[in-house]
Length: 124
Image (cartoon, rainbow, N blue to C red; front, side):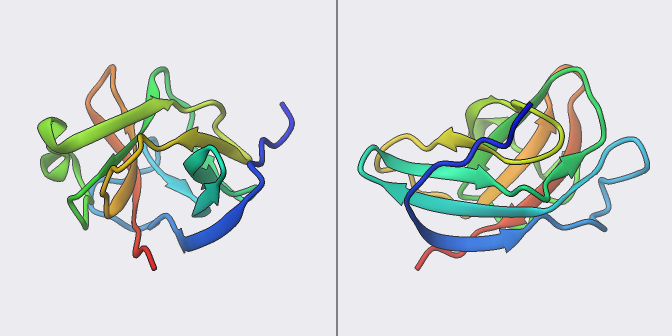
């Protein structure tokens, strides 16, 4: 599957952490993540360098919580689901609901309640 890139202005960029306590050889991810501003709104853009271990039910979430590094820090009541992870390697993007404030992006296995990876986002 080709990389999926949304055109717009990059307003924040960071990398997924690779050594969080909730990660292991079966549950991890890496690569860059950006926030892109477009005429249609804001989007989470996973970079071309994004990759994650394979899983059956990975989803992309944003949250006001920071430093989500393990299953016990992922409060489902405080997460906003953006959708199923489109692909486990390469670029893809996800629409952020209008007027949503957030400080982190997390990849989560919904079926098994497993933390995969997360990044804090500092918006300009």
